[in-house]
Image (cartoon, rainbow, N blue to C red; front, side):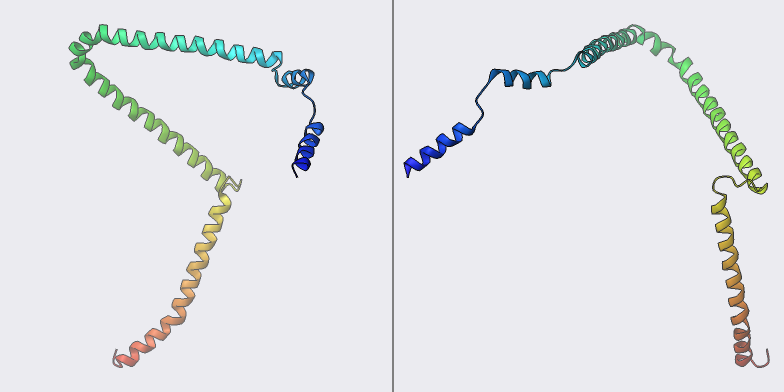
Length: 162
């Protein structure tokens, strides 16, 4: 029994490919990046480090400026805080009016094209809704006409003198 096990192990070892340094080098060469990929990685590293340096200088400058100008900001805040609030309100009002104006112009343009029959985007939905409302109103009118007489006859039965 041990003899059969040894022959199967020996058989497996014999069928395995022998370790060859040239196949290892070929596999390694397949995974090596080409020069374009290497230049891309180097460009990414250089650009990232320059941006990191600029970011750190910007944060340091902002902190030093805040430390240096903090007394001036605190002393002059009764002047510029109300001015900034008024400017913010005026600017927000102006921008909202401009936005409303753009919306009004767009709606009027759409309506002009719709009534001229130029089929602007969404006009099919408007036509569908209008037809559906018309159909529903006609069904309600027919229903009222049909059952209105029924109710009037019931009222006459309940109150013959009415």
